[in-house]
Amino acid sequence: MPLILDCDPGHDDVFAIWLAAGNPALELRAITTVAGNGTLVHTTLNARIACTVAGISGVPIAAGADRPLVKPLATAEWIHGENGLGGPELPEPTVPLDPRGAVELMADTLLASAEPVAIVATGPLTNVATLIRDRPELLGRIREVVWMGGTTERGNVTPYAEFNAWVDPDAAAIVLASGIRFTMVGLTVTHQAMVTDAVRDAVAGIGNRTGAFGAELLDFFRSMNQEALGLPDGPLHDPVAVAVLADPEAVGSVLTRLDIELAGTETLGVTSVDLVGILEREPNAHVALELDAPRFWRLITDALATLA
Ligand code: BDR
Ligand code: CA
Image (cartoon, rainbow, N blue to C red; front, side, top):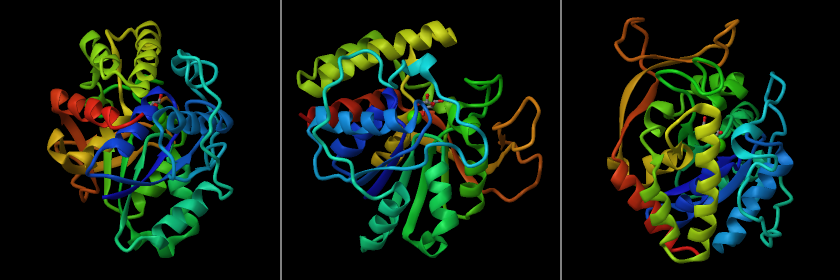
């Protein structure tokens, strides 16, 4: 299945890139970057580093929005480090930056494809919302949007909001209102993708450069999640969104009603998921709730094993 990955690397975004590039069911056609975990300069550099380390060449990488649509940018150095990819020594990227902007690359990728293309977004939805707003004639070419963001429970940046939703809630609302098939892969399901010792060792044990670099990323990411959020291990959020397309059986979802809070004083960016239908509104989103974790980790290690 052809896909565009829109991301803000970020440790877990790197694993999303690697899963998208290394899974045989997926054909990664483009990578676009957005400000989120770090500034756009860092997230773009980090996407190129992720591809360089893994030997991914020939997938164009383009930089997108350097700030959310309305809110000022807030970044997550407290989880991902100053450069957005704390832990390993970072090599100079050899993979080039595409001269086009993210929205232009997305549009060209959609136009060049004989079949609709899925968009997986693992950061704030700024680029995807801009594409929808500026190029509405292309909506029919987008197969679906799968987004890591939101939560049906509590948040990780405010008591009830998840980071990607909170950074650019206005963009999330635009994508949701577009009518494109939408799957929310929120904390409820990504907290089932915990990087335990066994997971970390399995990644290191792959025995290639990608696995060694990945294990260093996981060490840093786990310790930051433990310190900053008091979690037992680090949840590897972003590749769960890629797994929805790579292996739909690995992720269980329900079709339900999702709304984004745009006006709350304490609840900005909250994803209101009406799991019991109390609002009697039309369902508008697939919301992932269950992860087959062993199956998910096999997808990850199998994909990394195909890389450099
Ligand atoms: C999301 O926020 C970022 O820190 C991660 O990369 C992930 O996309 C989790 O809330
Ligand atoms: Ca991310």
